[in-house]
Structures are given as structure tokens and as C-alpha cells.
Length: 568
Image 1: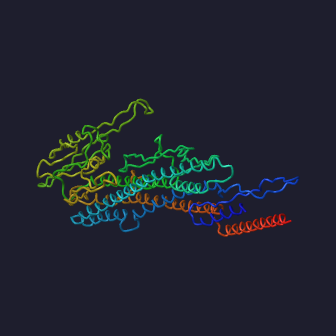
Image 2: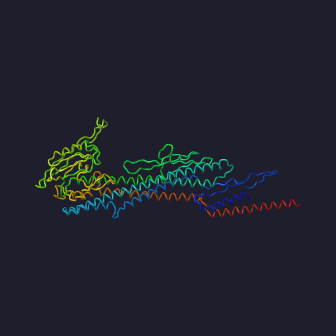
Image 3: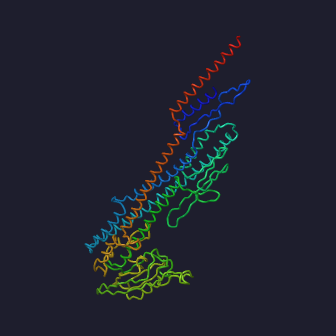
């Protein structure tokens, strides 16, 4: 009767927790009681309750937790890709590709009516719109990275709360089970611990080991979080990426201060989303913007507008005016080459052209044929040298400003100057007669002179206002293969970035769907073992009820026999 009572209690416990998250079905363990010998015959002594245990496959439980970690990681990565694709908005009318097309279409309009200043100013407007679109995309990507960074910060406290809870439950479970003489488990406490372990596996990949006293050790990769009675806390450390405005948050473990060995879970998905998905695209966008600025400016700087300059100051400063220009700290180092400066007398209409040599050598390793000796520094034309060479040209004066920029001035009100045929890239590097400013997606802009004086838009190629040859070269740039972009054009390169992103997104989404399906299948297996089945529990309840009734009938028969014996 006692065994049936315990069985009914356990069945009732299962039925009452059918909808409790994390509950593991319990089962009463029954065994034949030790027999006894009242005389010469051995007689059975009924049934005994060995204990109450959970119905669980610990190996399957570990696989479920691992699959949950993988599913959370891939789901977070898939979400990040979705957010990035929404931000880019390709194939809409407000994407980078559309802005790029509008910009070069504006240049085409100048070719049709080169004397029309309105069309030239429109180029400046479309150029600014393109720069702002790239700026905005870069900034929004950074904002998304910062948001993921904040979530990393939050996860650290969640990990510490869960490990503290597991450690506390370890102590209680060990106290109950270590000294027990039967098979009874601390079932309720174990339920709580399994829930905590599941929640922890959602955040990070974990591996567990349970000892004979019921204490669970928890590891994240090679890092121990809980070992027997010892718990190690995690904290948030920060790394400043010099190539980004983001200060990345990382979860580290005490006392080694090493980054937690995370390979799956939500934290891994956040890392991948922040650094690989968003960070990777941000770097590609920077490369795209950098190449657009450099390649466009190199072509543009060799052209002339409808009017020349009477003074002009370079937009880019060098770190050292005495250092060779290719080692002076410029974002775009120039190379060996030459450019022409054209001086026009506005009174007589005569033009003189002077070639300016830029002689530069790159830094090398010397000392033997294999290039492993002492370094040979870069040498050649410095900014001061360039200013001196320009000063030798009649009609202009050149100086190096206090902030190490090159300034060129006409020495007479009748003189205006322009530039042509730059093979060194020095004009683009110094920001002289350039259209775009900046060096990456965060800093790209346009020269304010384009708004102030649209006549300066350099569409001509052989002289001030003479033709549209340079404009034709600029207009053909969208399809022009560029060495800096692996022989892709500006248009093709951005398309390749976007296509690669969508391909990766498709792969991650497929992986996320597969991980979710695998987790669901393992969870179904787990529920078939550990979940409460109402039909099965109802049958168990009836079985224990009938058993109790039969045992009660047995007691009644014994009682009647004793009464008869006493009445004899």
C-alpha cells in the first residue's frame, strides 16, 4: 500500500507539471522486498520503494544543449544579415548603386552641354548625395555594431547569474544525494539545474560532467566555469580596433583574463555578426569608397574647367614636409611620374605648359640578393622640393603652409593656372584640383569648391574650356577596370560586394534552418523520454489505484482471519 501511495504521488506530480517548462518526468523505482523465514519456508515480504528518479538520457540532454547553442548562433547571424540587407536596400531607388548611377549620369549631362553651369553644379549635388549615402551606410553599420556590442555586455552578467545559480544548486543536490541510502534524486532541484544549464547553453557552448555526488562541472570550450565547488566569473574587456571607430566588447574569464573560448551560442552569433558580417562589409565599403575617391580624383586632377585658378591650396597635409611624398603620411601615396601645370594669360589668351617631375623611390630591404639586409628608406621629391620646383615656374608662386599643405598662387591678376597629364598621382594625393575628399566610407565628401564655383568642374582635357575629353574619361569610369579593385570597375566591385553578402546570407539562413530543424528533432526525442504523456500517466494512475485497492483487500482478508482466530 505504501508503494502504491508513493506511485500515486509521483504520478500526480507528473500530471500537475505537464505544462511546466523544463520539468523532467519522474518515476518511482520499485523492487521486491527482502524475504523472511518465519519457520522453514522462505516467504516474500512484499514490495519496497528504492527511490524516485528522473527519466532522462544525459547523453541526449548534452546533444540537445549543443544543438541549441548552434541554433542560437546561426539564428543571430541570420538576423544580422537580414538587418544588413534591409539597410543596404539594393534594387530600391535609394541605394548606393542608384546614387552612383545618378552621379555619372550627371557627368553625362555636362558632356552634352559643357557650357551650362547648372549641369556642372548638378554634378556636385549628385556627388554629395553619393558621398552622403556612403557616409550614412557606414554610420548605420557602426550603429548596428554598437547595438550588438551592448548585447555582449549584457550577456556577461547573465552568464555569472546562471553559473552562480548552478553552483548553489550543486551544493543542495550534493547535500541531498551524497548521503542517501537509496536511489532517490533531488528531482526538483535537478529540474532547476537543467533549466539553468539550458539557459546557459543558449548563450555559450557548454560541456558538462557530473560526479558521483551529483555535482556538475561546466566548461566553455577549454575554459572551466564551474569545477566541483569552484566557480570562475566572467567580465567584459574591450579592444580598440585602429581601423574602426568601434571599441569591441569581449567576454573574458578570470583569473587568466583570456577571452572566453566561445564557438557557438548567442554570444558567438553576436561576435560573428559584429566583426565578420557587419565589420567585414564595413571594411569592403571602406575599400570601395577609398578606391572611388582615389581613382576618380586621379582622372579628375588632370582635367581643366571653364576657368583656371588664381590661387589654390591642397586639401591634404603631409606629416613631414621634408620627407619623400610617398613616405610623408599621405592617405594615397603618389608614385614616380610627372604632371603639367598650364599658365594662361587671360589678356593675350596664350598658354604655356611646364612639366613638373616627381621622382620617388620606394623603401626596400637591401644588403643581399634576397632582400633581407638593412632597410633602404624611400627617397625623392618632398613637399618642400615640389614647392621649390613650382616656384621656378614664371608666373606662379608656391609655398608650404604652416599645416604642411601646398599652396599655389598666380603672381599676376592676368594669370590663371590649371593642371594636366598627372602620371604620378601627386595632385590627387595632395588634394589639388580634386573632386572627392576623404579616404574611406566614413570620411568621403566633395570639394566645397564644386559648389562655390561649378565652372571649375574639370571636364576639359587639353586646356581651360577647350573640350570635354576629361569628362568623357570620367563618365566611362563605371565600366573602367581598375587595378586597385582587382581589374573590376567601380560598379562591378560594389556589385561583387553586395552579391557576396547575399550569397553568405543565403548560406547562413540555410544553416540556421538546418540547425533549428536538428534542435527540434533532438528536443522531440528528449520529450519522448523526459516529457509527461497524459495518456501514459493516466494509465499509471489507474494501475497504482488498482494496486492500492488490491493491497487494501489483502489487508482486509488478513484482518478477517485474525478476527476468526481470536474468536475461536
